Each structure stands twice: as C-alpha cells, then as structure tokens.
Image 1 (cartoon, rainbow, N blue to C red):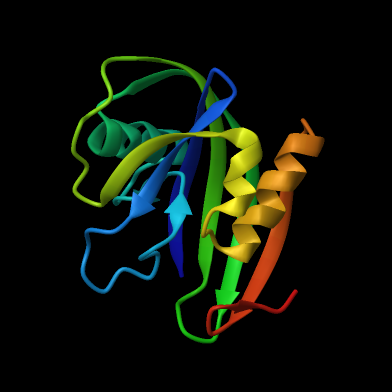
Image 2: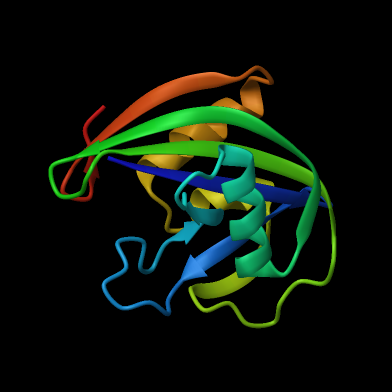
Length: 147
C-alpha cells in the first residue's frame, strides 16, 4: 500500500495542473493531475505535500487545506491512499521546467474536459460541491473506473 499527496493550487479561478509527459513507465502518462507525490519515511501528510509541491513547482504553500482522502483500488497497481489538498496562497516563482511534465494553469471549469483519471473527476466535482472533508473509494479494472 502506498500513501501520496495531491494538491490543486488555485489562482484566479484556475488550478495548477501537471500534464504528465516526461517520465518513463508513468502510470499517469498523458493525463493532467494536480501536483504531489509519495510520502517519504516518517513524513506527515502536510510535510509530504509541502516538500512535493516545492520540488515540482518551486512554490511554497502558505495557505492550504486537506479536502479529502481517496482510496484507489486497482487490479494493476497497489492500493493507494491519496491525501487531496487545495491551496489558495503561496510564495515563490513557478518553475519553468518540471521533471515530471508540464505545469499549466487551467480554468477550473475546463479541467473536466482534459484527459484525467475518471476517479479524479469524481473527487474534484465533489470538492467543488462540498466544503467539508470527505473520504471516498474509487476502483479501477485496467484504466476503467468500475465504481
């Protein structure tokens, strides 16, 4: 089982998205996702979030909120518990280059039309409707959402 963080940084009604197009054997290849990554030994979710965002974007989050915990179950990959955050304030300058893909500010209402995981659309829509923390489980067979 793996533990990860994912963050949707908001600015001017846009989310910072990472178009995954640079890593070999990337299960997210060709998809748009938030920024984040795997926990390191002894890290808390917040520590992982702050480190991963800084590494991938160059930004330091100053206002962020844990929005949901999503459990991903798959017949192809190990089970993943993903702590999903939103952030509304940060310092620093956005990196021009990210080793994992291209960083792009996308209008929030256009995100659902991009190539993303179907399960991501579920929690993103729920985050827009609900302001309270929630948990959910999404299950895939291959690349297809089954629940």
